[in-house]
Length: 256
Ligand code: PEP
Ligand code: MN
Image (tube, rainbow, N blue to C red; front, side, top):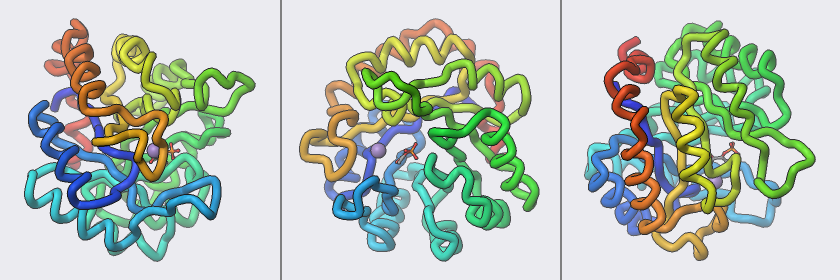
Protein backbone atom coordinates (compact mmCIF):
# COMPACT_ATOMS: atom_id res chain seq x y z
CA UNK A 1 0.00 0.00 0.00
CA UNK A 2 1.50 3.34 -0.99
CA UNK A 3 2.05 6.48 0.95
CA UNK A 4 -1.37 8.09 1.19
CA UNK A 5 -2.58 11.61 0.64
CA UNK A 6 -5.85 12.17 2.47
CA UNK A 7 -7.36 15.27 0.91
CA UNK A 8 -10.72 16.98 0.84
CA UNK A 9 -12.57 19.99 2.15
CA UNK A 10 -12.77 20.90 5.80
CA UNK A 11 -16.55 20.40 5.77
CA UNK A 12 -19.14 18.80 3.55
CA UNK A 13 -21.09 21.83 2.31
CA UNK A 14 -23.01 20.60 -0.74
CA UNK A 15 -23.08 17.74 -3.21
CA UNK A 16 -21.72 20.05 -5.94
CA UNK A 17 -18.78 21.06 -3.76
CA UNK A 18 -18.00 17.44 -2.92
CA UNK A 19 -18.28 16.33 -6.56
CA UNK A 20 -15.91 19.07 -7.68
CA UNK A 21 -13.32 18.00 -5.09
CA UNK A 22 -13.78 14.28 -5.84
CA UNK A 23 -13.08 14.89 -9.53
CA UNK A 24 -9.81 16.65 -8.74
CA UNK A 25 -8.76 13.80 -6.43
CA UNK A 26 -9.62 11.17 -9.03
CA UNK A 27 -7.49 12.95 -11.64
CA UNK A 28 -4.58 12.59 -9.20
CA UNK A 29 -5.46 8.92 -8.79
CA UNK A 30 -6.12 9.38 -5.07
CA UNK A 31 -8.29 6.91 -3.20
CA UNK A 32 -9.52 8.82 -0.15
CA UNK A 33 -11.56 11.92 0.50
CA UNK A 34 -11.81 13.67 3.86
CA UNK A 35 -14.68 15.97 4.83
CA UNK A 36 -16.40 16.70 8.13
CA UNK A 37 -20.14 16.59 8.71
CA UNK A 38 -19.98 17.06 12.50
CA UNK A 39 -17.70 20.03 13.03
CA UNK A 40 -15.99 20.81 16.34
CA UNK A 41 -16.12 24.62 16.06
CA UNK A 42 -14.75 26.99 18.66
CA UNK A 43 -17.83 29.21 18.49
CA UNK A 44 -21.36 27.81 18.79
CA UNK A 45 -22.47 30.51 16.33
CA UNK A 46 -20.25 29.17 13.52
CA UNK A 47 -21.25 26.52 10.98
CA UNK A 48 -21.58 23.22 12.85
CA UNK A 49 -21.59 20.91 9.82
CA UNK A 50 -24.35 19.28 7.78
CA UNK A 51 -24.78 16.48 10.29
CA UNK A 52 -26.62 13.36 9.19
CA UNK A 53 -27.69 14.99 5.89
CA UNK A 54 -23.98 15.33 5.19
CA UNK A 55 -23.56 11.59 5.67
CA UNK A 56 -25.92 11.04 2.72
CA UNK A 57 -23.73 13.29 0.58
CA UNK A 58 -20.68 11.28 1.63
CA UNK A 59 -22.44 8.06 0.64
CA UNK A 60 -23.27 9.47 -2.80
CA UNK A 61 -19.66 10.53 -3.33
CA UNK A 62 -18.34 7.19 -2.15
CA UNK A 63 -20.59 5.29 -4.55
CA UNK A 64 -20.20 7.61 -7.53
CA UNK A 65 -16.40 7.97 -7.37
CA UNK A 66 -15.37 4.82 -5.53
CA UNK A 67 -13.44 6.87 -2.97
CA UNK A 68 -12.99 5.88 0.67
CA UNK A 69 -14.37 8.57 2.96
CA UNK A 70 -12.88 9.86 6.19
CA UNK A 71 -15.05 11.89 8.51
CA UNK A 72 -15.12 12.87 12.16
CA UNK A 73 -17.49 11.53 14.77
CA UNK A 74 -17.93 13.61 17.92
CA UNK A 75 -20.79 11.94 19.74
CA UNK A 76 -21.15 8.34 20.87
CA UNK A 77 -24.78 8.45 19.69
CA UNK A 78 -23.56 8.91 16.09
CA UNK A 79 -20.95 6.15 16.04
CA UNK A 80 -23.23 3.37 14.81
CA UNK A 81 -24.75 5.38 11.98
CA UNK A 82 -21.36 6.82 11.01
CA UNK A 83 -19.97 3.31 10.61
CA UNK A 84 -22.59 2.68 7.93
CA UNK A 85 -21.46 5.68 5.88
CA UNK A 86 -17.79 6.27 6.64
CA UNK A 87 -14.74 4.14 5.80
CA UNK A 88 -12.33 5.73 8.29
CA UNK A 89 -13.75 7.24 11.46
CA UNK A 90 -11.87 10.31 12.60
CA UNK A 91 -11.54 11.29 16.25
CA UNK A 92 -10.61 14.95 16.33
CA UNK A 93 -8.06 16.73 18.46
CA UNK A 94 -10.68 18.03 20.88
CA UNK A 95 -11.97 14.55 21.60
CA UNK A 96 -8.68 12.70 21.91
CA UNK A 97 -9.23 12.32 25.64
CA UNK A 98 -12.93 11.52 25.46
CA UNK A 99 -12.50 8.01 26.78
CA UNK A 100 -16.17 7.12 26.36
CA UNK A 101 -16.01 7.99 22.66
CA UNK A 102 -12.67 6.22 22.27
CA UNK A 103 -14.13 3.04 23.75
CA UNK A 104 -17.17 3.28 21.52
CA UNK A 105 -15.11 3.49 18.32
CA UNK A 106 -12.92 0.76 19.76
CA UNK A 107 -15.95 -1.50 19.52
CA UNK A 108 -16.71 -0.76 15.87
CA UNK A 109 -15.32 -2.52 12.91
CA UNK A 110 -13.89 0.49 11.08
CA UNK A 111 -10.40 1.94 10.87
CA UNK A 112 -10.03 4.91 13.21
CA UNK A 113 -7.90 7.96 12.50
CA UNK A 114 -7.01 9.35 15.92
CA UNK A 115 -5.74 12.91 16.02
CA UNK A 116 -3.38 14.08 18.71
CA UNK A 117 -4.99 16.41 21.23
CA UNK A 118 -3.65 19.92 20.80
CA UNK A 119 -2.54 19.87 24.47
CA UNK A 120 -1.66 16.18 24.72
CA UNK A 121 1.73 14.71 25.54
CA UNK A 122 3.01 11.69 23.65
CA UNK A 123 2.11 9.42 26.55
CA UNK A 124 -1.43 10.77 26.64
CA UNK A 125 -1.73 10.29 22.87
CA UNK A 126 -0.54 6.70 23.08
CA UNK A 127 -2.86 5.95 26.01
CA UNK A 128 -5.74 7.35 23.96
CA UNK A 129 -4.79 4.92 21.18
CA UNK A 130 -4.75 2.12 23.75
CA UNK A 131 -8.32 2.95 24.79
CA UNK A 132 -9.38 2.11 21.24
CA UNK A 133 -7.21 -0.98 20.97
CA UNK A 134 -8.38 -2.21 24.39
CA UNK A 135 -11.86 -2.69 22.93
CA UNK A 136 -10.55 -4.87 20.13
CA UNK A 137 -10.11 -2.38 17.30
CA UNK A 138 -6.51 -2.40 16.11
CA UNK A 139 -7.21 -0.64 12.82
CA UNK A 140 -5.69 2.58 13.97
CA UNK A 141 -3.97 5.48 12.22
CA UNK A 142 -2.35 8.15 14.39
CA UNK A 143 -2.28 11.75 13.24
CA UNK A 144 0.00 14.56 14.39
CA UNK A 145 -1.88 17.82 13.88
CA UNK A 146 0.11 20.34 15.87
CA UNK A 147 0.12 21.43 19.50
CA UNK A 148 -0.44 24.71 21.31
CA UNK A 149 2.67 26.78 21.96
CA UNK A 150 3.41 30.50 22.28
CA UNK A 151 4.17 30.67 18.54
CA UNK A 152 1.43 32.25 16.48
CA UNK A 153 2.86 32.41 12.98
CA UNK A 154 1.29 29.00 12.43
CA UNK A 155 -2.10 27.99 13.81
CA UNK A 156 -0.52 25.26 15.95
CA UNK A 157 3.09 24.10 16.22
CA UNK A 158 3.70 20.95 14.22
CA UNK A 159 5.64 18.63 16.51
CA UNK A 160 7.66 16.64 14.01
CA UNK A 161 9.54 14.72 16.68
CA UNK A 162 6.24 13.09 17.62
CA UNK A 163 6.32 11.21 14.31
CA UNK A 164 9.64 9.61 15.18
CA UNK A 165 8.50 8.87 18.73
CA UNK A 166 5.25 7.24 17.63
CA UNK A 167 7.21 5.15 15.13
CA UNK A 168 9.56 4.16 17.93
CA UNK A 169 6.85 3.28 20.42
CA UNK A 170 4.05 1.83 18.29
CA UNK A 171 3.55 0.02 15.02
CA UNK A 172 0.59 2.11 13.89
CA UNK A 173 0.74 4.15 10.70
CA UNK A 174 1.40 7.83 11.37
CA UNK A 175 0.18 10.70 9.25
CA UNK A 176 0.62 14.47 9.53
CA UNK A 177 -2.20 16.94 9.04
CA UNK A 178 -0.58 19.94 7.39
CA UNK A 179 -3.72 22.07 7.14
CA UNK A 180 -4.76 22.16 10.78
CA UNK A 181 -1.24 22.34 12.14
CA UNK A 182 -0.04 25.15 9.89
CA UNK A 183 -3.32 26.99 9.38
CA UNK A 184 -1.75 28.37 6.21
CA UNK A 185 -0.83 26.92 2.87
CA UNK A 186 2.15 28.95 1.66
CA UNK A 187 4.68 26.74 3.47
CA UNK A 188 2.85 23.43 2.97
CA UNK A 189 5.18 22.04 0.28
CA UNK A 190 8.30 22.62 2.35
CA UNK A 191 6.78 21.04 5.42
CA UNK A 192 5.42 18.14 3.36
CA UNK A 193 8.95 17.41 2.17
CA UNK A 194 10.21 17.56 5.74
CA UNK A 195 7.66 15.12 7.11
CA UNK A 196 8.14 12.77 4.18
CA UNK A 197 11.82 12.67 5.08
CA UNK A 198 10.69 11.45 8.50
CA UNK A 199 8.93 8.53 6.89
CA UNK A 200 5.32 9.45 7.59
CA UNK A 201 2.77 7.05 6.18
CA UNK A 202 0.59 9.83 4.85
CA UNK A 203 -0.36 13.47 4.78
CA UNK A 204 -3.74 15.09 5.30
CA UNK A 205 -4.53 18.31 3.47
CA UNK A 206 -7.65 20.41 2.94
CA UNK A 207 -8.81 21.44 -0.53
CA UNK A 208 -11.93 23.41 -1.51
CA UNK A 209 -13.35 24.69 -4.83
CA UNK A 210 -13.53 28.25 -3.47
CA UNK A 211 -11.49 28.43 -0.25
CA UNK A 212 -12.42 31.97 0.66
CA UNK A 213 -16.13 31.10 0.50
CA UNK A 214 -15.67 27.99 2.68
CA UNK A 215 -17.96 27.65 5.70
CA UNK A 216 -15.02 26.58 7.89
CA UNK A 217 -11.22 26.96 7.80
CA UNK A 218 -11.26 29.33 4.81
CA UNK A 219 -7.65 30.49 5.35
CA UNK A 220 -5.98 27.12 5.20
CA UNK A 221 -7.85 25.26 2.44
CA UNK A 222 -6.09 24.98 -0.91
CA UNK A 223 -7.71 25.96 -4.18
CA UNK A 224 -7.62 23.32 -6.93
CA UNK A 225 -4.69 25.08 -8.54
CA UNK A 226 -2.77 25.18 -5.28
CA UNK A 227 -3.63 21.55 -4.60
CA UNK A 228 -2.42 20.44 -8.03
CA UNK A 229 0.89 22.26 -7.49
CA UNK A 230 1.18 20.69 -4.05
CA UNK A 231 0.47 17.25 -5.47
CA UNK A 232 3.06 17.64 -8.22
CA UNK A 233 5.65 18.81 -5.72
CA UNK A 234 5.22 15.90 -3.36
CA UNK A 235 5.22 13.47 -6.26
CA UNK A 236 8.66 14.75 -7.19
CA UNK A 237 9.93 13.96 -3.73
CA UNK A 238 12.53 11.27 -4.24
CA UNK A 239 11.54 9.60 -0.99
CA UNK A 240 8.06 8.98 -2.22
CA UNK A 241 9.08 6.16 -4.52
CA UNK A 242 10.78 4.48 -1.60
CA UNK A 243 7.73 4.90 0.58
CA UNK A 244 5.57 3.49 -2.21
CA UNK A 245 7.69 0.40 -2.39
CA UNK A 246 8.35 -0.20 1.27
CA UNK A 247 5.43 1.12 3.20
CA UNK A 248 2.97 -1.60 4.01
CA UNK A 249 1.81 -0.07 7.27
CA UNK A 250 -1.19 1.80 5.97
CA UNK A 251 -2.43 -1.16 3.99
CA UNK A 252 -2.25 -3.36 7.06
CA UNK A 253 -4.86 -1.18 8.71
CA UNK A 254 -7.37 -2.43 6.21
CA UNK A 255 -6.06 -5.98 6.15
CA UNK A 256 -6.58 -6.55 9.90
C1 PEP B 1 -10.59 18.27 11.02
O1 PEP B 1 -9.73 17.48 10.57
O2 PEP B 1 -11.62 18.54 10.41
C2 PEP B 1 -10.36 18.91 12.33
C3 PEP B 1 -11.30 19.63 12.91
O3 PEP B 1 -9.12 18.72 12.84
P1 PEP B 1 -8.58 18.80 14.34
O4 PEP B 1 -9.43 17.90 15.16
O5 PEP B 1 -7.17 18.36 14.20
O6 PEP B 1 -8.70 20.25 14.76
MN1 MN C 1 -10.68 22.08 8.91
